[in-house]
Length: 190
Image (cartoon, rainbow, N blue to C red):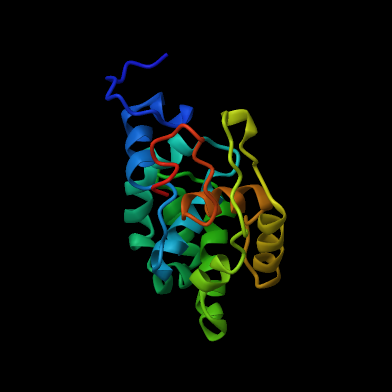
């Protein structure tokens, strides 16, 4: 049970766990991303989320943005060992060396990908033909053939922390697959 005021809207169950999650659900989750830097930020945050809750990542998102200079690709690609050590000392973010190093490697891979259409187009090319139509949270898939193929392609191109489950979460977050529950007010707006 939550302590959020009833505003008369039916949402996906996870969205009513806190005001932060409700706002993310209502205003951001499932909406398309068009810019390379925004897509890179989402890809990076999904990597940091591996093994943790999305609420943890949202609580730290502003600190991540500050630490990684708004996920500036040139900054992230140019992280030195000293820069990584500085980030390891930043208690406001997730201090997992492998994930910080993956952010650097993924920035390098994203820059390289510009020669072949770019990150946004590559990820978008794996959008499924149809989205599931879940009535309950238990019916929401955690991966798909498309997310498995996307993860494989990204790994082939040098990306790290891009497994099929977090790539499915990315696809949901950026509007490539709609897993809002059938009764959710955002289902047809996504």
